[in-house]
Amino acid sequence: MVKPFWKSKTLWLNVLAIAVVVVQAVQGQPWVNPEIQVFILAVLNAVVRLLTNTSIKGSPVAKSDR
Image (cartoon, rainbow, N blue to C red; front, side, top):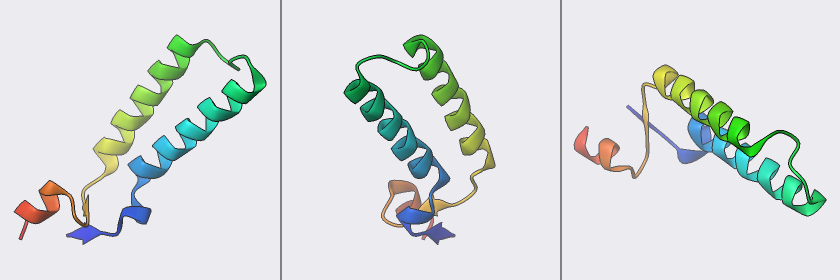
């Protein structure tokens, strides 16, 4: 089973992470220690990955599922 890319929880989590980094860069200082931010993002990505059971359209996995 495949889904469009905009329904990807992993994609949206990482878009949010990029937005947080950009806002912090504009403000000139991090809200939380960068090492802690990386750890939190890694844990959240792992959790989302464990909850994910479908691939996105156009991914190599989706092509091999045909």
